[in-house]
Length: 195
Length: 148
Image (cartoon, rainbow over all chains, first blue to last red; front, side, top):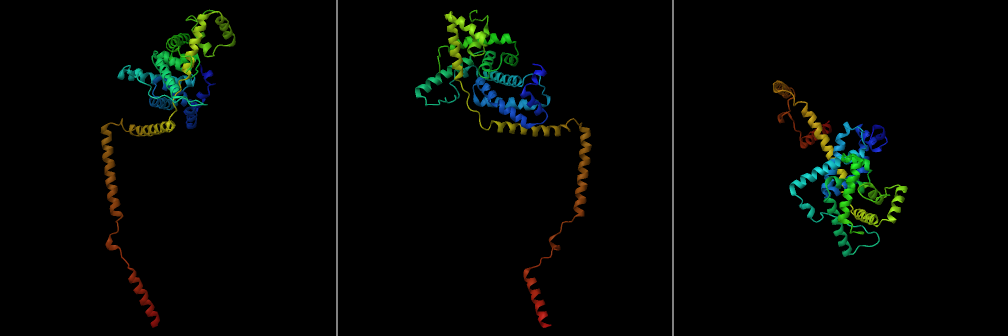
């Protein structure tokens, strides 16, 4: 992305204001991207306290880098690159420390399911949780790059070009990566008609 | 239209994600009508897509921002202190020692001068006047006035 295109990026404008000492613009960036960054990190590391801690570090790094910030890429590309880097480092350290045992653990915490019209029965709730755990484990079992690509594509609705930039690969390589990732997920999850 | 396989990796994913434009989607749907294998693939991809939809992230801690701003504030403070101490750190010892000795001597001289110039009043200089004394003086003055 060139400087001209980046000029259209409102986030980059806000970041340039942060660079000029406008703390309120940092607050706007935080407000806008807090949830997407934390949720992305949560699905990647699958532990909410860790996700929040890593997100703190992401925004701290953004703030620390304000003086040297140049809008050479879309702001969210930069933001998710930092988030991905931190999360993958954490996962590598964690795997190094504990091996793969975490994947076999039960879910540390699952969000309670929101049903608008009626409360689910105990049985429905149990089935939901079991299936959700299958989803969680299927995602965890993907190779790092595939997992990160799927999360950004599915939950953050990022464009292929942007995901490719975050992951440092070409757009066509990303498409193949996603195809392989979804093929693996289909093999593991296609039996779920709906949960 | 060709079948959905690795030769056109984005089509299946993009179709189920609703990312295909109208023309491409229509072309694929015409192909699906005659291709059970691709129909099955689309159904499986849709099942995965919906399964992933159900994975909600937990709520964010209400004090997330507060914690972040506290860290930023602490970091700003520590960086100020680092800058302050950093200004002295590159100074070699042979420059620091004479400066410290001179500053110490000046401080001692200043303290001595201050102590001799401004003597603190001691208790012996303070005259305490009691209430009874005042009353008796006033009574004496009253008697003298009556006598006159």
